[in-house]
Amino acid sequence: MFLAWNEIKHDKLRYGLITMMIVLVGYLIFILTSLAIGLANQNTQAINSWQPKTIILNKDANINIGQSKITTAQLSHMKINSRDSSIIGNTPVVVTGHQKVSGQFIGLNQQQYIYKHLQITSGHKATKSYEVVADTSLQQNGYHLGSQIKLNSSKQTYRIVGFTKNAKLNIAPVLYGTMTDWHQISNLGNDFAGNAIISKTNLPAHNQQLHSYSLQTVVQNLPGYSAQNMTFSFMIGFLMVISLIVIAVFLYILTMQKMQNYAVIRAQGIPATFLVKATLIQSVILVGMGIIGSLFLTWATFAALPAAVPIDFNLPIIGATIIGLLFTGIIGAIIPSWMIMRIDPAEAIGG
Image (cartoon, rainbow, N blue to C red; front, side, top):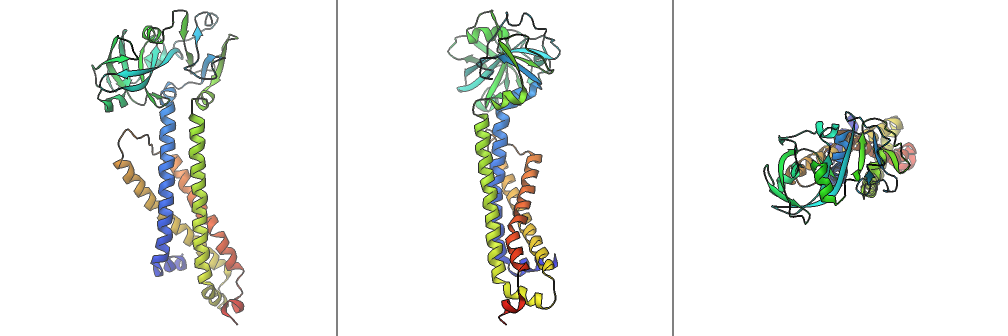
């Protein structure tokens, strides 16, 4: 530790440049990770708030809530307990009023658990037709309690009577209303019961035209969800590899420049393991300082970004990223460590 830290203090410029590179790479990794988490959450906020264990859809709906249609006849043999199961209607809408906003209308049955457990941040729940509870993100578009809105091309006016937090589906804000309104907006008759059955238990389908899916299966089949996560994962993985290469190259160059110094130390009887340990500690210190700098830049970016940007600082995932960067630093120090182990004092000094 003493040798590693004193080397850094002695050659501030070189080690400062290495640290700056790590800061920039780490900053990019943290921002991309936070964006990936934020976008993923905005795809699934509403579904996660329902806390489902199983979701029943039409088997021909390609595991997509919006494409699924469940008829009243298909429900005839199912026993749905309103305390842990809800039938929902879902249709995409365009909200017009202050600004045009794409949204997702969710029709709820007032006797079932999703409606009863809906958390309201302001106002009250929708108790009758033409009333909606909207996601709080609509407030950023100029909407407020009592705002009169229209959905799609309908001339019917709806009123926002409440707001709820973290209610987004496929990155669009959710508007909760009645099943009667859902039938009207989606132009479906009373023969259709809804789009999906959401259950907090392992509810079987009991119908050949329906299929019961796990929450994870439905989430992974949300439009664009898996492709988006895979893209971000590859980008973050490549940045990890880049940080590994940066650390390894810089430490390799520094080790080559100090070969004669290491040879003199070895000739004085200092074991190679001591020098290898110092190199590993030095790598961890550099990466640690780089992580601190990148976390500060990330925090400053969060403070400057508008609320509309889908970015989320998830501590467990960021913590795992930090551990990954530290391991990257240790791996990057392996090549210089191998060179130190092979030093021949007489040959390196020139004797």
